[in-house]
Length: 339
Ligand SMILES: Nc1ncnc2c1ncn2[C@@H]1O[C@H](COP(=O)(O)OP(=O)(O)OP(=O)(O)O)[C@@H](O)[C@H]1O
Ligand SMILES: [Mg+2]
Image 1: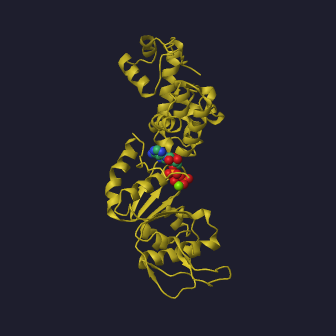
Image 2: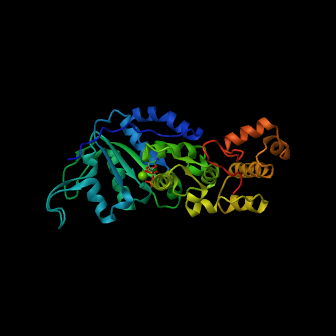
Image 3: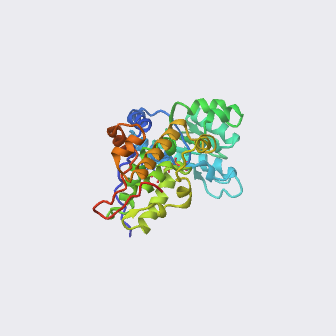
């Protein structure tokens, strides 16, 4: 029989300023018992943050019930959430407790709240306001004591304006909104998360990224966010022995990584790829430094002169963007300055 492993405390890996600010508020939020609304694209870590909040709250010893609202067919949603009495409908052979009842004295996590149909929204509102539920087919109300954490992929206010989300429910759950930025807006977390994931998936292995591979990872848009990064790292851990090179990365990352210094390309990044001006500047700066290193065969003094930059500023930027001179290091790994 499998022994239940002790649960590791939830760790939110980040060094990004915006995320650190989120994390700095979490402990207070967890202790407050307030309703929390997590907003962020798929794979940004909404569930991880919900785990953190529950685990650090007074309810930590009690139930934590998580529901992916978009995974439950609309016709079953009501009975899943609020339960039903015996004989409430044809297939209701036995009475059944709903998820709200199961979460009593604990926390309930309503994921994908943006996907909840209107008729359930009305019922949810009633439960949140009255703090009691009535099972389908039932005639008595049951008091419930739950803390709500909801998660949404989109700005619910926009759905309210489009009449796809009830305004009153929106105000009921938008008590403490927490916005989690997508990975492409916190690129400084990519190396840190990659390293963390390598340790998680192959603890014995000392897998490292060549700088060309890391620059490509830093430049990629990450539509699937940390989940996508996790899947890629998991694959790399399986198939790569020592150094992850650009050739080991999936095509979508390799294809976005070519060096292009033209204004046309920058405009394309801004408009087609929705990169911010800051990101485009980082991309341009990285490319110019790489090109200068390439042109001067890794001679920092000549390369910095080429860019009219002080050598120490040039070195600082190389460090910031994980660039090296491309000279063979003693471990035998070459890291070509250009690709
Ligand atoms: N800051 C983080 N540190 C470490 N791992 C993280 C972090 N954020 C997310 N992850 C990992 O990334 C994966 C996706 O995170 P999670 O499931 O929390 O995302 P989500 O926002 O809930 O996505 P979805 O909207 O698709 O449900 C998980 O494997 C999680 O462990
Ligand atoms: Mg999730």
